[in-house]
Length: 113
Length: 111
Image: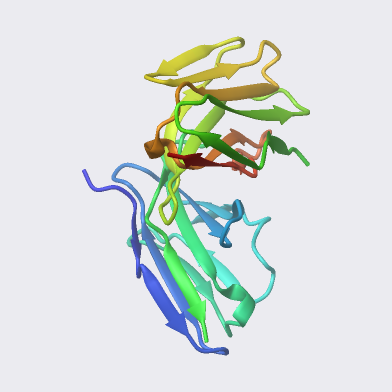
């Protein structure tokens, strides 16, 4: 019973490039959440999606960031024209239902050169 | 908006000492969840409390949910080096159902 799968584990991009982070939720989970974490800091909520729908994107910057969770395939967090400040760990989590305990992936560590 | 305040931010204890972290909310919570994140790792769900005044135990860990469902605590008895990490409380955000995380308490231990 595979857990939440995130890839890649590490991603290096140059300023101005695009970063694409993928997340496959646990089997049977249709609720997906994305968080950003800076070193030694807490988890900052970015976006909450449920199959094909964005439920809450209040934590996501209005520009350059987008997220989707298509009917088929993983959830994607996309960052366009990356800047140094985008360097962080990005965690995806999934849950069986809204408000229920979340299961986290190993995260993607994004580094911007 | 709703926030979950967590204290202390850091706690450094001698191995064998006890440790407690506290979470407080200004609004009534439907449930509260606790997570542990080891250094370099990802958050791992520990437990969920739902009922007013609920107390749950996991070996040396004791979790409490306040009578008013506005606060919670995690207490570790006789800490061990394996307890090192950051402990987060989290709760559903009113009707929007996203989970709001506290800022976490980072526990370090002197052997």
